[in-house]
Figure 1 (cartoon, rainbow, N blue to C red):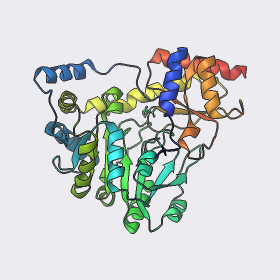
Figure 2 (spheres, rainbow, N blue to C red):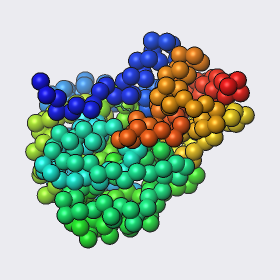
Figure 3 (spheres, rainbow, N blue to C red):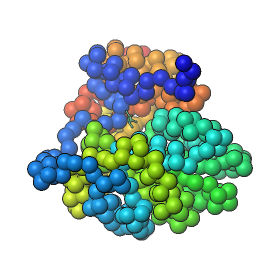
Figure 4 (cartoon, rainbow, N blue to C red):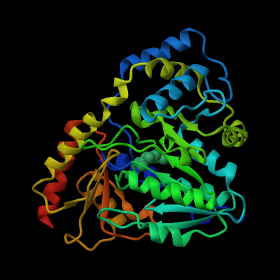
Length: 382
Ligand code: GLN
């Protein structure tokens, strides 16, 4: 049989988490918290189940959750989305990304993708018959050369995929980036998919520029969020898509046959939980402390650190320590010192290797200190 995705294997997250479990390593590879969700949130789910919310949710999502998301978006980004016509609850951001891309990409369309890129965008583009066109960004700052981006736009360009705060680099798009994107999208009538799953995790006072807050972008963008990152519940797989009515109609055509609807008790619980904004406004502080703790544990090492403006990933360069390819070193460190990471080359189409490893610091403090110590010692030995 001819594969529709000949270049796709098992994701690096699955590979590294499996290896970490096999060898008993501290798993700083796949991005998920090692700590528990708020017991109050768990109790709300149990309550929703006891209240009998155990059958299919409405296809677009439970109304109270769509309303809570609309309110949050309006409060934070000054942009009103109608809960009935512009908000859809999805099985995590993964489903939302797939549904949005599938809904609008036609065979032969070109889609601009900034790389390093999260791994789920390109397979969705290719299954829809589209062609990813890569804008390659380089360390240490991964800044965007908008002149280069403009050169890549052709009459076939249909969509741009944006991710801010960015996995794996931790970069947060600036207001200037947003204006450049808005001008480009307007001039060439482009649609946008904005992956904003780390919207609440950014540091050093940085603002998250949601595409929802730019009118020119709002009218052509699928803004995608997820509760997994925000409430330490990556296993629940609940996310959402905000998009103007015409885009939402097309989005839901795909969504209703991908999953139809999303787990009901979780949606009721999240609707109630969202009524207290401090549950997400405190996240920058919480994660900034973890980032800084991990960095302090590595302060005496020979690694160099790339800036982390947002997300819960710290990128670490080992250039000068060894010439090993990053994927080999990631495996070796998992086996030899029991610390698992993600090699950043996997996020590049050509597997461009800048000798950088990504560490997830959504872990309890003891684990961060222990991992930091082991990495520190290793770097001084090589
Ligand atoms: N987003 C998570 C990460 O970057 C992984 C999610 C997954 O395993 N698909 O590590």
